[in-house]
Image 1 (cartoon, rainbow, N blue to C red):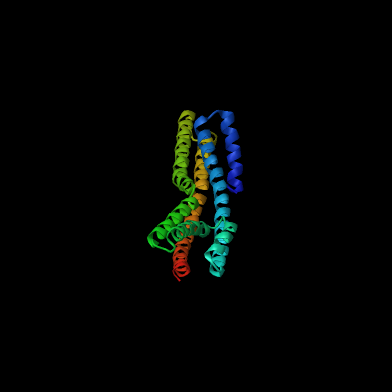
Image 2: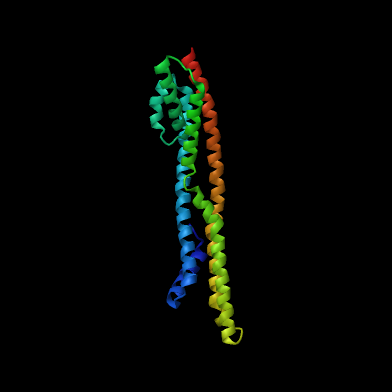
Length: 228
């Protein structure tokens, strides 16, 4: 869940209260933080599933790669592993290798194959990192949006206190409530985003290392296949 139940219940009460009392700035702050939180959690679940599929498909493809009798057979089998980043890298390298063999009868430019493999790795890394910047933005910006709401709520509390001529909970309560809810909302949106941004970044780095290692295996197998 994007928010804990107590925070969510408090948020519902404050939103209804802000709408009824026509306080546009605190309402805008809470709605903005709610949008950040909902979208971030949607992205977290989507990214979690996509990375899980990528790692599982990568493991299956690498096992097939090491058991394949030939590169041609593996090229046909790789169509079954569309979620595998290493399978996509294989496609880049295999296309360049077969182009050279068909044109020249053998491998003449290994550097070109290595460049194509690196291009594939770069493309897959970019795909895996898609929308990760949103989590980073949420983690960095939401605490400050919440802080703005906190400061505004405290200002409201002091204005009510000065206008009432005395200290009373009825006077300062709404402003303090706005401040606390804004703080809680800012943290509720930012903390999960920061945690999962770091976690997903580590997973993507591990997949990147696996792709680099696969590129070396591919070059070794290609040289053995076409130079024998």
